[in-house]
Image (cartoon, rainbow, N blue to C red; front, side, top):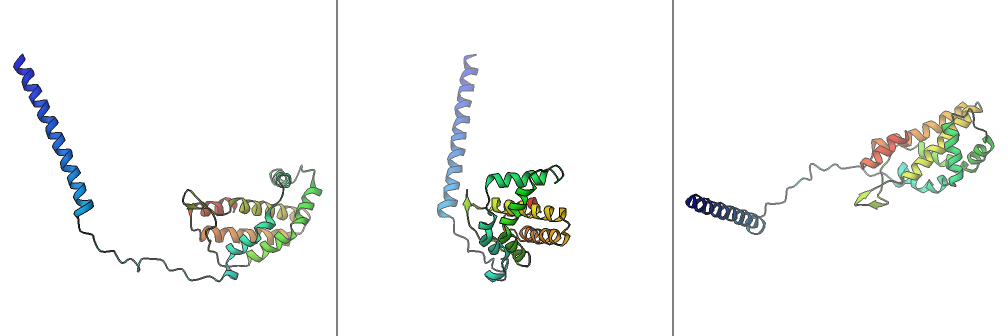
Length: 195
């Protein structure tokens, strides 16, 4: 019995020694590839890069949107009023005067949206970073979308179908450009979510 224990003890030490040698060999191999391995030449990937044609600033819908974002700011009370109006499908909404006031106060925003809707080019420019990734101004896009929906619904109620159709087309064109030319997944999803 004692001899079996001695044999197992020797085998255990042998296995441990072999494991230690294997670990040392692995560390040595990694060190060799990090320190002594020859560097490979830099791969020329210039033929694989996507060359985007330049877009003049005055034709870029994204830059026009960024310039117009101050027109999309309104109070949280007005935002809630717009949201209730959209969600109630206009039927039971009692504060039409509030909606009319909001629409009237944002005429400059609707002019900017109309101008943005006539543009055919979109390329975002990084404006804010979070965790190493670029994010578009999501809240401004959502406010623009809600403002356009309110204007379209109110115009439709009043029988002004051309205005309702026009504001809907202008905002949807911008968001489809945003989706088609998105530089990040967030931008793509914002374009889809607001369309």
